[in-house]
Image (tube, rainbow, N blue to C red; front, side):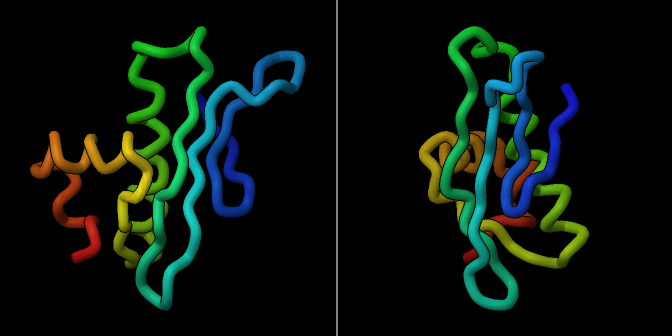
Length: 92
């Protein structure tokens, strides 16, 4: 699935323009961001889209040399469940 970057978020709209998936983050100091929200429309759940959204933020922060504070409950659980994938990017 392709996502559009919009400020401090990545999102996907359906054909009618309704937002159906989104992840948001906010800067925190010079070298961190807080991943604070993940949303996936119920019609899309169970397809791994929330993880894809989190991965978009991870890719972006890797490029910028920043760490992520996973404040969103979904992102926190994902980081905890897959430390081999996310430990390098998680802020202490």
